[in-house]
Structures are given as C-alpha cells and as structure tokens.
Image 1 (tube, rainbow, N blue to C red):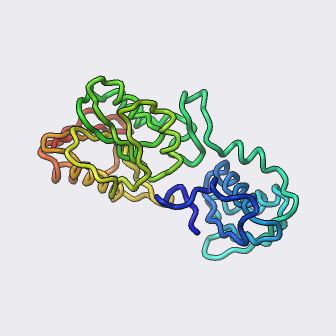
Image 2: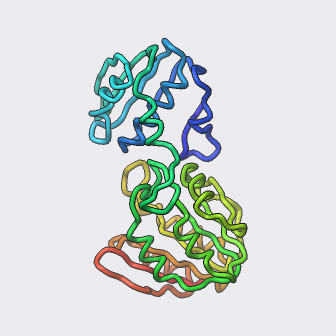
Image 3: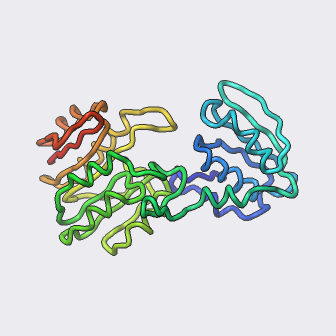
Length: 280
C-alpha cells in the first residue's frame, strides 16, 4: 500500500493501525520535525520484529536518520548509495520517545500564526511574505472563485471576507494542508479538494482565481510548475475572469501570462516579489 499526504487518494499515515504492518520502506522527508513524526508513526504501525528501511538524501536529513531511529530504541545498520543514507532496523519492543515526536508533528494550532497547521505543509511555522503581500493587494471579489495551492487557507480567508463571493474552491495536493484549511476557513461558501491543482477538480466558468503557485517539486526548483498553475487558471476562468497571483521576482511567468490572457498587468513589485493581475 502507498501512504503519502502528497498523493491524492493514498492512505493517510494516521490511518495505519498499530502493529499491523510486516514491513515498511520510508522515504524520509527533509524537515526534522516532520521526519521524526513519520518515523514514529511508521514504527507504531509495525508489529514488533518487523523490518523497516528508511532512506533520505544525505544533505536532506539522511545524515541524522540513524540517530533519530536510535533515539526511538532501534538498533540501526547504516549504508550509503547514490547520495542516499539508508538505515535498516527491526522494530523493537518497547519503543521509546515516540510521544514527543508524535505531538510535535501532528496537526496543531499555532498561537503565533493564529492558524491550524502541521509540519511539512508549506510555510507551516511562519507567515509567507509573498502570501502576505498578495493579501494586502487583493481587491474585493464577487461570484465564484478558486484558490489553487491553498496551503493553510490564508488567501482564502482574505477572499471570503468579501460578502459578494458566493463560492470558493480550495485546492491543494497536500492532504495536511487541506485538513488545516478546513479548520482555518470556517465558511459555508468554501469547498475543499485534496487534488493536484493542475488537473483537478473539474471547475469551469469561474469569476476569479487567486494563487501563490509552488515552484519546487521533490525539493528541486521546477519553474514549469508555476506555469502549469497559470495554464490551469486560464482553463477554469470564464471569459473576462481574473487571475491574481504572487511570485518570486525572478520566476519567469510574464511570457505565459501574456500568451494565455487578454491582458496581464503588474500590480506591484519589490526586490523579492511581484504581483500580477491577468484577465482572460
């Protein structure tokens, strides 16, 4: 079975029953808090004596992987291959130190953000400066719209402050983001979709789209990802519908905006970010 918050339709890690697995292979995430949470969840789901193989790039958590497993009471055999650190272990009995890791990595309310959040979600522990700039620039919308790559729901909350918005579809490929957004956006006009925003859900005839599109995939910069989000926005907008987006200043979105939209205007730009309004 495949378990991942980043593959729509996959089983949730939290759904695994304790001591139910005979073997597990884990591609450990780069963030320390998220990684310890994943390891603790998987160890809980393994029966005592079951095998676990965990691996990660050496420069993205792999160098610490063995120690983290030992902290949970595991004996670890370590090896390296193709820049990966590979750790093999047998689930011990008893496990130790899991409770703190499980609590730290779970869905949680952040007093600092005033939002529900979870380690591993984009900008999970700090306000994203690009999103904040876009929130400050957004006009009041009306009608039906979408937030593509909604994250924790910060843009959606700003959009739904407008009384003339009739519906807003929030879309994100990360199930944890959708779970947090459901709590952060308590509005009956909101609809939530765990989906790849480039492909789903089926939307059409929208009056507006807002987004802070991603530009990393698998930890590697992918400029085509944001361009694909722009193409998707054009597909789901009605003629005359408007796209508002924020992006890092260096990302090359101008050409695709001008190719696909009747008009694309820069709203603001500083040394780090740019905001565009584009009308279909």
